Length: 87
Image 1 (tube, helix red, strand yellow):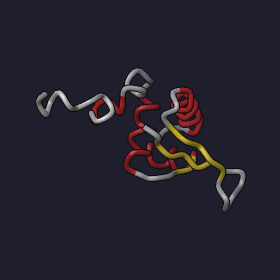
Image 2: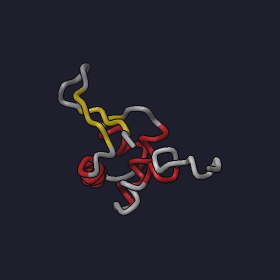
Image 3: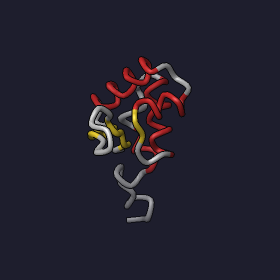
Image 4: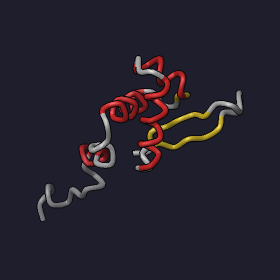
């Protein structure tokens, strides 16, 4: 068995985006911004991506459907949710 045979789908960095690949461009952008930033709120994502808040909400809902993001409530402000990329 060669070294290339030992690489599995879990080890392939390009394959980690397979859940996101077929999503709309806005969801891909949000995922990429979350990849560069550890944890962001929805408003921070809208600011970073320059997308309207409604588009960010839609992108996050699509990413949540694919289990590509983790959402948790903020301890500092329980009205806000913090999003982290999970792929």
